[in-house]
Amino acid sequence: MKYQVLVLLVAILLPNIGMGELTYTSDEDTYYNPEREGLNTGESMPTNEEQEIEYNAEDNEIPATEEPKAEELYYNEPAQSMDSVQLASESFQCTCTGKGGKTLGKSCQDIKKNFPNSKSGIYTLLVNGRLVRKYCVMETLCGSDAGWTRLVHFDAQIEKTCPNELKLVVTKQRIHCARKPSVRRSCASVPVPSDGIKYNKICGRVSGYQFYSTDGYRDGIAVTRGPLQALVWSFISGFSENHNHCPCSLNGHEPPSDIGEYNFCESGFRNWGYPNNHYKKYAIEDPLWDGKGCHGRETKCCNKEGQRKYMPFFLRETDVTSENLAVRICCDESTDNENVSIGSYEIYVQ
Image (tube, rainbow, N blue to C red; front, side):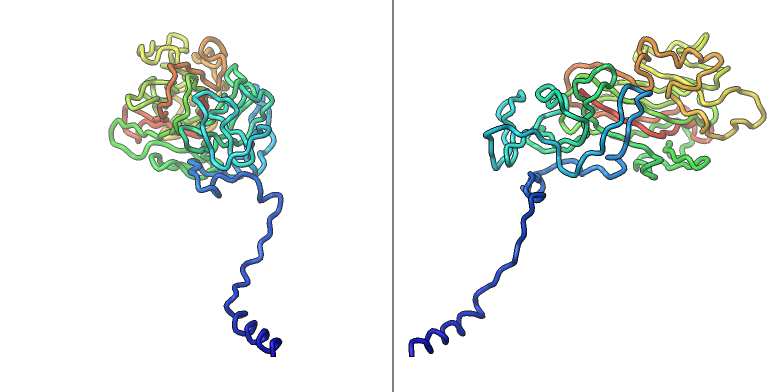
């Protein structure tokens, strides 16, 4: 009788007992994932193309780096295990840790200072209580190996698109980005957020192309800082190599005081006057501001001296700030007569 009652109870209760889901946890699933913890990571994971970018050592002493692994690059602090991310103080003291004691820094410079053997790659930083992912260059750049935080890297040929503020142009299979059509002078500004990262040095480079009759410092690209658009660096497009208005060229024009020495200047056209060799065209064969292809009156413009010593990279120091940056294209005539396009740009701070 007892046996029959037991069988009856099992038959009644069994359908109401949830079997649950079978789960499997591998070692790969145990690393700290900020998104899994419900924290704001700020910047999305770079694409494969971005991870695979290699620097040319001939350009600026940056050796090619290994492609970062899918895991974030952290540094383990012994005997530390915290389920939440905490910022112990304004300075990095190896107490900013995530799950499993994985240390977070506030900038790439912060990490390099405390972990000198750090390699270039993608790191998760803790900035003002928010997690952001940034690529860190730990090798020498602009004369410093103290750790550079990359704010932006854009290459139109790789992205095959342009920022919303610019127009996509294809010339001889080369993709670049220019001002949108305008019948008068105009500027187009592309924002470069700092994500709250503090810095007092800005290093970067811009490559671009001349369209038709640009003629000096009012035509080109500028990197600016803050809401007042304080000039960081000016990239000027000259008229032609032998009829040049560049400050660095023979008998060149003196730039305004706000530009001063903080500029690169070059023309994409060899000569002016040959029939239709540049009429309404982009000088796609000679990219601007790459430290190459300077001839005639502008020969000195490729000399790596003074403020051009890191060319094609620029270096500008400023007061400590976390202001956002911007990349601006400006010309003082219509796009039918003058334009400057962007092929690529990259900006780092320290």
